Length: 469
Image 1: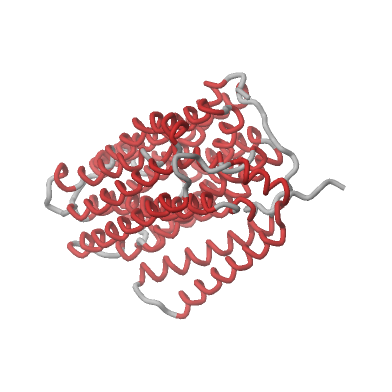
Image 2: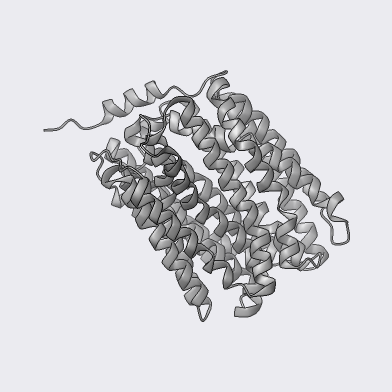
């Protein structure tokens, strides 16, 4: 199948997903300014990120499933509108409580728009055209992320941190107009929504994030932290029980894990994107607080990373359609591990070109080999009926990794001076280790030279699907 307006469908999906990509990179650069203006503590600064990531991680699955059920274009437009309204509320927030509430609503909007953006592409394109479209989607999204830090840094320095949220409004308006006019509706209409599963996932992630944030920012494991961790683990068990009982009606159907390839992709996504999210949060904060960078300089310092990813992702999308994802993912993740390790060169007095730039460049090269192949492999691993669910699940795993990394990052953010640099070096090495493990996961679980078999997954999902009465 091919969309009636393929280029405009691609543009609408890119604009929609860019909202989430830009917001994440821009907010990281603005954290010190937000903390100063609103008098936020290190733990509260973490919640500026986590208030967004928590609903995003918890609701991505049901956001994708809702698109499969009610219509992907409809949910895409609704998600964009929610995100835009919440962005305006962030800009108008009078105190930290209002900002956190608006950030949470932003996360809800992103949880709806992201999986339906990708599922719309999966429905509109097939074969090698799908690989090219997804590669373009990933590449332009990365470039949008590249524009975010320097633009956000300039806005923070010249106008103030509130301006970074206003830039989402015109982008959202353009995405809605194009989607309503040119994007075709697509839906399966058979899958019921899994509200019990969504509730259990939200409770689990909320409890774990809260407990890890307290533990890392206060540096103490007390009874409150223990209660939070135990509650989160129990909620995870409840979530798994619910999903198992619901079978194909679950928002995370167990049949999707019928092959080790899909399980390997899930593990790779969690580890690699968790490590990347932690580094992208900490690096600009360290450069501003310990190395004396301005917000604009910190934003420009990150530019090689997403820009390099954007320039190479379209090529990798075409390559993956021909050779499969195994070696691009294995080699790319290992290169990312090297880039993380090079960030130990970052120091308060070291020149940018010999301290920050080498690590950012190597990470960009590695991630450019991962983004498009990973997305293509995930969509190929299930049938069209579960396209939104699969893309939502993979995005949820990526955001959950970033959510947990952000919660743990309090141990670095709460440091100061030389100890801040030392703590960052430790975090960079942990990220390198996680990326190396993700590389091994791709090597050991993906088949040689081929994408995961969509046929086997599709058959299992159809077998598990309840028959109509």
